[in-house]
Every structure is written in structure tokens, then in C-alpha cells.
Amino acid sequence: MVFNIYDPELAALWFGKAAEQGDEDAQFCLGECYYEGTGVKRDRGQAVALFRMAAEQGHEEAQFRLWEVYASGRGNLVNRSEAEMWLREAAEQGHEGAREQLSESGETI
Image 1 (cartoon, helix red, strand yellow):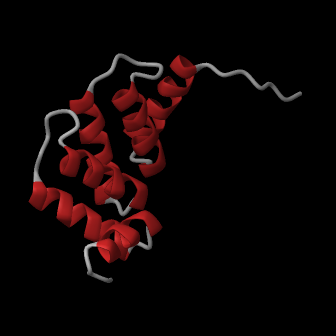
Image 2 (cartoon, helix red, strand yellow):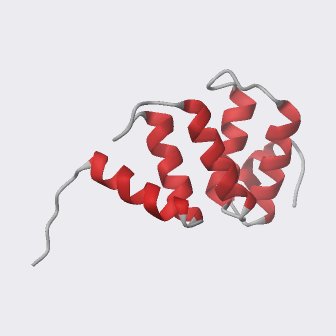
């Protein structure tokens, strides 16, 4: 039997369990939960910490998300050098959005 139930609190709980085991996809997904306040109380600092854990393992979407956070100052975290570093990392991993951003600024990977 297949159930199709949307339960953000339960999803965050299971992402948390997998994230504790070092699963980069779970770290990224739990980071999104914290960033948006889905299933957990919004905590942008915790979100960035989780994005960083996943990004340091090579998770290209987490790398791109860190670029977005640091470049835009979302969560009061403006850091242009960090933003640039994570954008390049994501582009090198093959993230299309990151490659497009670099291309728009006249750079390529």
C-alpha cells in the first residue's frame, strides 16, 4: 500500500536522522526546511550550517544555495568572497545555474 501524505514535521525529523549520519542530500533538505521554516522553526543560521556540511561533501545544490545566501545577504550573511567560492564550486560540479551565473559575468568553467 502506498501513502501520499505530506507531513513536513515528519520529513524534517527523518532528514535530521539521515543528516546526523552524514548524508549530504539530507543535510541539504534539512537546511531547506530550516531556511524556509517548513516542519521546523525557521533558523537561517542552522540552515547555512547544514548547507555548508552538504556543500563541503560536494553537494552542488547546497553549494549554489550558499552562493545565493552569501551573495544576496539573506539571513544577514553578505560575504562576497564566500559567495564567489561556492558559485565556482557549484559550477565545477556541473550545476547549470552556477554555470549560467558565471557566464553572465563573462567567466567560464
